[in-house]
Image (cartoon, rainbow, N blue to C red):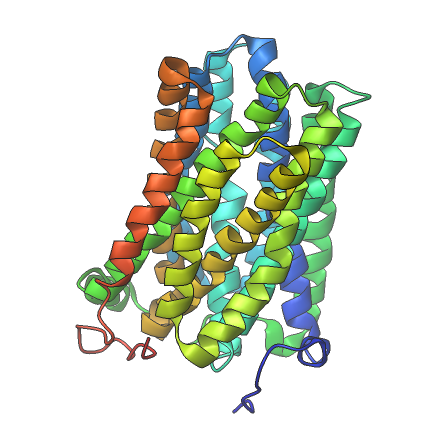
Length: 414
């Protein structure tokens, strides 16, 4: 049993074992690729002659297809285990569809290719998060927050790096060459986890028969708290997907910023999340998930409105930083609350279900924002996103303090 520790400190982070560090860095690679696509999107759209609506449908289709890819990923993790191999495979696969997108010659081809970009990402998350939840049962908030911190690191480095590279090469070459980091990191992580005896198959636990698996899934589907958390997570994901689809386009097309400056501004949003994730995760471990989520959701909605109103550069950068801080602080808290409620023998499926719902909700936001932008102007799409995440506050108060079904571990009192 791990000794409980108090408030977040760098000393606490320093004591973290190599498993958590390695998985968190691997998570950074999985976020590198989507962040690359967001920065390339304005130039891809211009090259292919796309409207805002077409851009929204393209990114929405990306998320919708991820919804169907997610569920098999959770089943594989829960039935097979071998998390080291699965995590390495996920990283090796993740860059392949993005490189094919670099050869797209039309909107239809881009739609076809983008169907497959979620495969590696959606295999990674159920394997990684179920491993962490089982390995760190009393510090789930901190462990998942550090995992999110790694993802935010990838999110932060990719926009800046890609923005600078786009100054010298075309977007197609960036996507093609971008295959290399995932393959290399996938091999390194696979070898590292394969050698670390205790690391391997930590998330697997007792193997389930197919009948036992589906019985556990039925129990999961009847749990009101988990279903509401999935919807809450989906609404947060809607805001994020809409924002990162159209914020780079707004910066490039409306404010006429260079690729390097667009990448730098997006990096500011992402960088703030590096610091907020472990702070929010640790506070939620001590004070409960509900108050942290309520504060974060409300503040994010207000900052989205401020983003539209403020045009002065120094204020704009400040709003972007605070927006990223609060938006990304929500993610690990939602997952920690979910893992509090989830049956441990199907934690992989619980994670993939939550990611599937996120993907489903995320698919609507870019398409809706695109139609709003074509009809009323791109700024109005940000008002829609602010209203979406504000509405999510009501779901927080609908989640029961305790799970409603027997056989599901009791939730942490919020």
